[in-house]
Image (cartoon, rainbow, N blue to C red; front, side, top):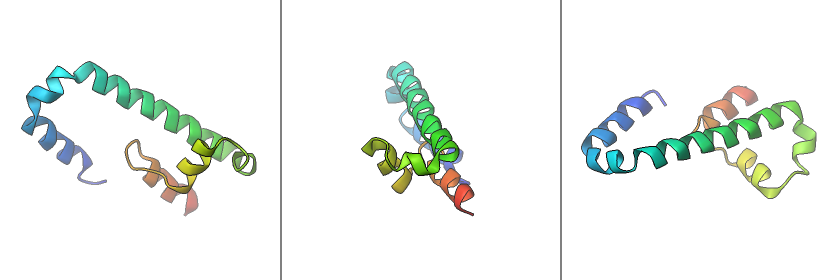
Length: 80
């Protein structure tokens, strides 16, 4: 995670035309993913036992968090 921003900057600079052509969709997609993941984490913290009975997407997210929106660092913080 320490080099995440540096890596993203490199990729954006390297593929600038592609990022520029799809900037709006990319930003809105990132924001939608961030909102969904934040909602799942808030539910996990608020209602851990009840979450196990929720839809499969919530169980899958909790079982295998991703780093895209900070899920993995959050999982580590919550479990330590």
